[in-house]
Length: 161
Image 1 (cartoon, helix red, strand yellow):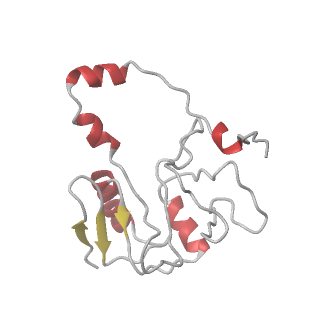
Image 2 (cartoon, rainbow, N blue to C red; image 1 turned 90 degrees about the horizontal axis):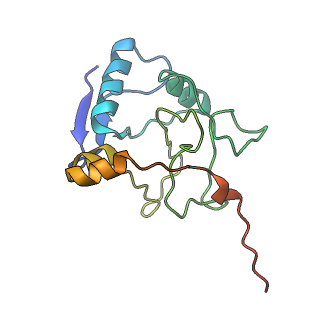
């Protein structure tokens, strides 16, 4: 099996072709995928049709899973957060579970129903952005500290109607 790598943008992302994802991929194939992820930051695999079990098995190859701590459902697996655009949306900038002390190494997004247009997901290469900063801004950034929480998700606006 030959995996083809097709970069999709100047600083981030590549599409990998010629591999069927799952927990049973060879160590050599996994290492290839892992190195591509480190290099390109975001990988796209088309036409995979994974079940939840296959999705989870593949994710475990990267290490311990970090399920989203704010959503629990007896109907869902412990590590897969099911989203349906008809029921819920992420309409603002967000990161995937970076507000916990031991945040995940990676996130895996599996599109089950892909619309013909819209539904875009935006990825950012913050390592590249940092590397391009002028030295004084890097020094400033290196000395800043912030508390990253998920309190916003639970804040209820108090509007009187």
